[in-house]
Image (cartoon, rainbow, N blue to C red; front, side, top):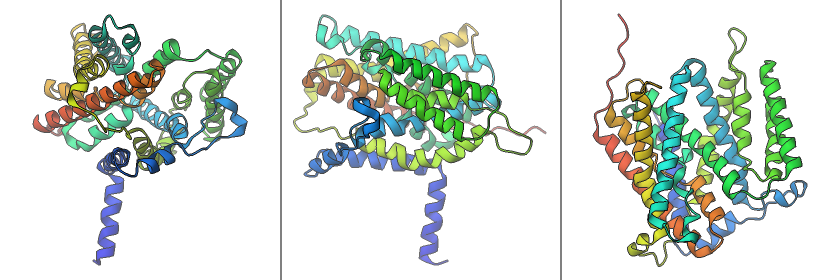
Length: 398
């Protein structure tokens, strides 16, 4: 076989594997971080701040390439994750209400404890305490590729549990933003968003299986949410929830078709772009002792300590109370490692930092804590899960 054909074969194999998507995400994140701390920082800033405004969206619309990625393209990521969860709810590891309850309970615990940790560290400083919600959300965009890259060391049911927990976490985080950090709600736009949601739900209930009603309805919902003051990526969540889970015999379901269409776009374009745009944190003048200031220390401890304690504690409590069983094939060591990865908080955390602190100094301190806490959580979870024994493959009956 010629070297060119061998290279092409390796590229196809890498593109089809979860490791390939995780590698693309990591390289894009390192590229953004590297450019932000190099003589090319101006180039990175120019790319992120590239003017890209649509007049039809008015003043509420994204004005830069970076804003379009965070507020627009990331809706596709949330739609894909919701579709994957819907597939598991239809015929997989989340096919019963008790299995859905476990990641939801874990998400709630993983929000309450980090907030309390942050408040304990910043208590008495009114300005700093406004950032209590910064460490409460697990970043599904970064956590999921890390888990996928671990391959067979994470059981499929455990992977689904973490994916569901991360998306519940992000949804709850968006609700927190809307309730505590959101701008004034524009009620006519919110009414339009409610009508678009009803239209999408009606199409799903009627069994409409063609993609275009959901694409158009999701677009209308995105615009309405954008104007309403709520986070527009919720449109991807709603559209994914409304897709029918059944199809005619021998035909792929709308959920399967959505996964086939969205997965390559999200894996190879949306997530790498998002990583490149959001990891450009300047480390110039950064000193270790700066992490001991209340805001970065509160954020870092909230992510590294509060998230795993909250998620693990709530999950174990739910199992002890017999509310839900642990995911199949998930021993305590694997569960603990996944709880460590829950401390990767980036997307929603960065957004909350911008909303919580008007003063640039405090926002920069919060970003430093987010970066340090997320990196430590990713490293700790990765090392732990590489050290614990991989689960034994399931035996076939007979």
